[in-house]
Length: 158
Image (tube, rainbow, N blue to C red; front, side):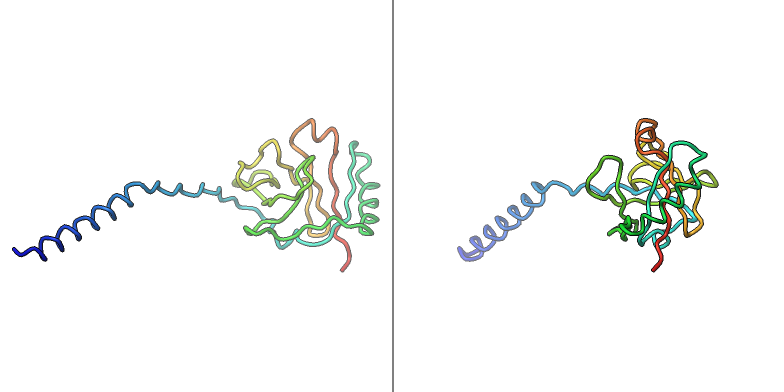
């Protein structure tokens, strides 16, 4: 074997070893966490829009609060579509909206909350009523519920 072939073989072997070493030193990419799949009769498209918002602490104030929520359309609470197919709403005490989803397991209650948490998580809100025009949500965290009450959203006219 002549000198040229020996140098060529050594060069190829060196390139192969370098490529193999580069593959071995790269850390594997972590898999994206699996997002739970929920069923719910409430879709993001049904919630996107402008809503009047008010809240009550005593059940006997529900009807009056609904009327107050209608007045809230002067300065509406806006629910936008989320980048992941959900909708953007505020968590308690958070100054930035987070992407939420409507969550239901089987025929159980419907919750609104973060898609990464199970249905009925402490930060969720339970859907008390939804008819397309009125959405009533109750916070599951008792401390938050004590401060914010039961939230009444009334869809604003277009």
